Image 1: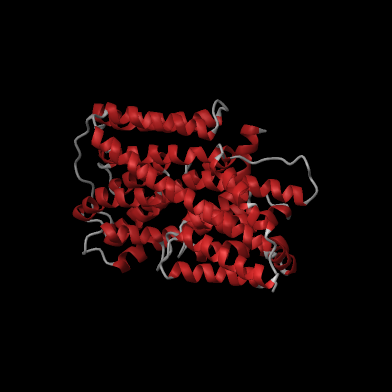
Image 2: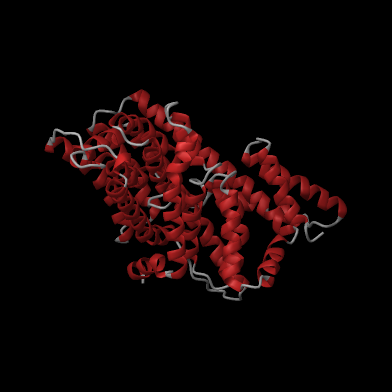
Length: 453
């Protein structure tokens, strides 16, 4: 009977592979196992009695209010042609240099990641806007596709990322639970703001690695990068395109870093700022506002429904002794803490092929994080490692989500094999970043400790 939690997890993965909705798969599988456990006497009904209070805790969670606000901000910026204007401005700046369009794509993708925090939206937007232009100018299809895919996944790690908001909330609960299990009854806390600050250095390093790679390709493999085309520079247009989104990003992140606002309050500022930005650019109409609100509601409902399903699943999983099973497995691993972290990272990486970051954050992280944190692992480091790991998973063939997003909008002339070859160097860069963070944890923990003490 001690292997029932493992069977539960395998059954859920099988149900998901059959194509059933994630939230219903999680809750339905959990309730089915709970009923069987009640009949056989292997499951306590008290765990089911805790479901109402768990759900009430979800809907009254102040941190999670940031989710619809950041989603609204991202969708509004996506619909108000911010990406198109940014790409045009960056092309005017860098287009006069060889490989300038690729540099523009990476910089605009990084800014969009900081603005929207949604991987799919960034990949699709950049694919529609920049891929035809890059192919027309003579960029190698693999190089162009790889740059766009890799840049789109930056939304996982560059704050204010929705993935970091959800991870921050889950890790906060897991950290407190781990400390209570260790007999610490005045537990320390970790916040979404801690993860935002902790992601700044790794995110910056990743963007710089991408840019360095583009420069190296331009130098060593010039056949993949066309000669620079003459570009007419219009300074006023550049400033009008760059300054408003940059100011909005700095306002959101700056208010968090300076301690003036919580991530939830900063998300409200970002949502209002995106409306003002759309008005300034003449892009806000009633129909567009309705579309933005509809998309925001749909995405938010999906997130919270998955969270409710994951809450039911985690309760039943714990009721069958799943947490103790994980702790026993980790304790028996020959490599200790390192082996436990490595195992979790491999599992999360593989699950990233079939599950989105929302499901992994709500299902897997609550099960393994309390055990890992009780082993003395820093919660900020763990959160950023998971985020970069998922980013790498979403980019890895043959099942990476970013690859499917780009395949859906890429011209027929761009082969799937071109996309796979193009992302390979970026996957290697992300793996190098993971190794660097494992060797030097201060890459993620130094700045939060400096800012927040």
